[in-house]
Length: 156
Image 1: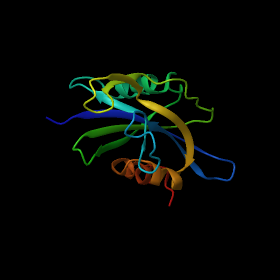
Image 2 (image 1 turned 30 degrees about the horizontal axis):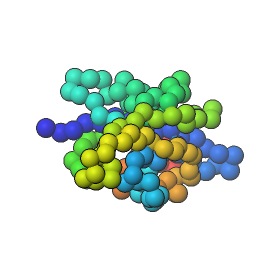
Image 3 (image 1 turned 60 degrees about the horizontal axis):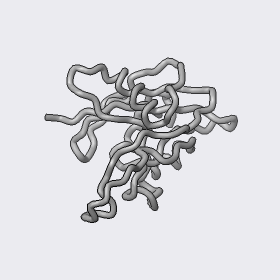
Image 4 (image 1 turned 120 degrees about the vertical axis):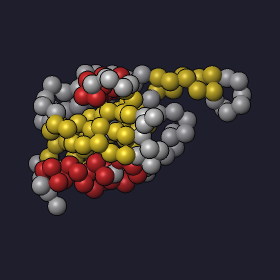
């Protein structure tokens, strides 16, 4: 059975015409000291029969701590990850600033085999990056989102 996930890719163009993407740094001890290939779009899993668009908006709010911007979202596509997970992505252009508030948390035994369980945020940072920078920051499986967005916007 394929694991399915849905997420939101927010974008804007700055005053110089540079495409910027709003992405999140994954939380928890594994990602704490990593920057390259340690960022993602806000996303999360959904179950069979659930509307992926509604799931994407729900997961955005859970990971960011604020509702997604009230703008028009467009299906960007489905993207198969190296883990075989399938991500359905919705893109939206925003003109307002987006603020990271506080992510939901997950529990993990840390340090490993210590018997001690700790809470960690799913996301510990979120920011705007030029698309060229976001390409190195995103986990490798999500980098094709940028090309798809360029195609959608008809940019080189």
